[in-house]
Image 1 (cartoon, helix red, strand yellow):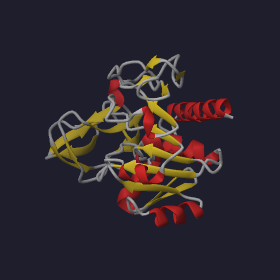
Image 2 (cartoon, rainbow, N blue to C red; image 1 turned 180 degrees about the horizontal axis):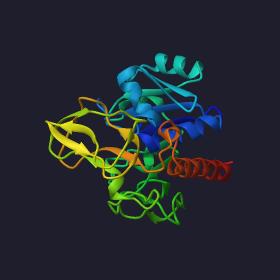
Image 3 (cartoon, one colour; image 1 turned 135 degrees about the vertical axis):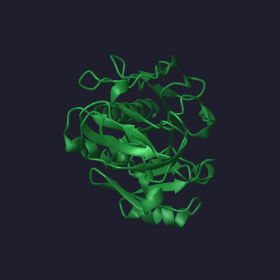
Image 4 (cartoon, one colour; image 1 turned 60 degrees about the horizontal axis):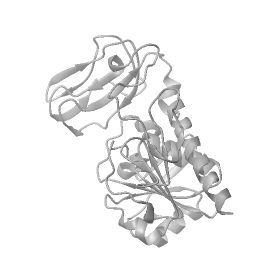
Length: 269
């Protein structure tokens, strides 16, 4: 299993939690595929930032950007003990890789084209997939009693559109674009803010926090956004350490992906 090749579609927060957990379990030949301009909110724990900066480290694990289709660069990156991130929205690199495992961690709330024949083991996160038809396993991503459940038949819960509760706050802790346009921050990830304080602007229209707390996530400055798009979140717990560490949800989902891999390969063995 240590020689297993894993391709993860997406490199945002949950995808990165999965990559981190597999890496720590000594499954280290990991390639993550992203769009040209990913818009992660929790940038401190998202390997997709390597698309912009060339590298990104999450809890001591580093990912490097490689050119899509460059198998030599991919091999060198793996030999250095690092994860690989490539811009490849159509997953062409995956076809060259012939992975043992494919994980769809895009979290688009619908299937954008993932299918069981893509690899010996295909795992999908969240709603939009049916286990046994689109993927071998589907992982529940909805917070609550079933978070992280490994589904072998059927689908994950439908998206509720309501963020998970933190200290009793749900929609209040999410920052959204008031209009379409370019986002410019006033505060940064890790900053303390109070209710009503300006966090950023879109086309001059102010975005203010609805609660006191720490800015836990914020999309990149200069990003173009649509009206209503999530651009950040405030954590009422007020602990800046939480900005740079994987969330409880991320760890739960990532552990379930690892469980699914072991289930499959133990059965095959």
